[in-house]
Image (cartoon, rainbow, N blue to C red; front, side, top):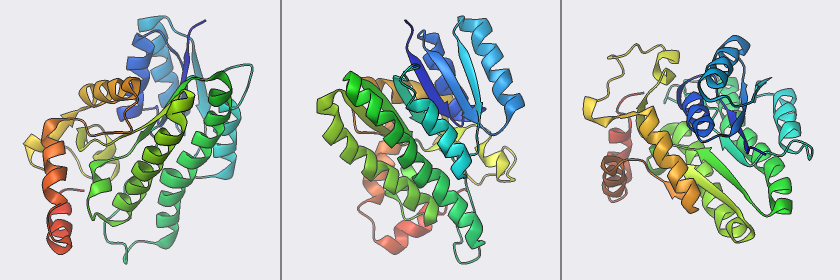
Length: 254
């Protein structure tokens, strides 16, 4: 029987690429996002290209209803999920004081609450079977003073590092993948067309490379993966800087 992977935020960007690469390895996929039309398009492409089974689950993971639906699918003993990719995410303005608090709360719900709930739902059956992989998409922002976006990503990294230490000996690895700026539609959704993000060209990564490295790290049971040498070096340097200077540098781009 083919393995099944559930990917959140699977309608575009890194989520769609995770689905594509997992399907290319023969995994059936459960695609989770809010946009049914976009999910259907991804599912159709994967079926046509790789001949895998696809399932579309329309869910808003900032709501109880949406997280309940995804958690229920993960915990269904008759349809086991061997790989969970917590990828769904949103960006927001870095000026916390100016942001509407309801937007900040939605941001927190998606990155922290949904990640926690779905990881919990997946862990129970994975531990019972003695195997499974959980990939939590974080960001290099986790290592920078970069507003509440950096804060929620830091939570994901800390949570994943702890969970991997505790559950990997029992057969379930948990990996935080921490990319830098990636060529997807993420910044366009923030109202920033390509070329207007304020980010130097050398800092951009390609989604297939990020996902490939993330999947390799998960296969090795690595707790935290920072794709690309350039970003590993950037993180190492920034960690040595005074906090005020690091905060100014972290405001590069959006």
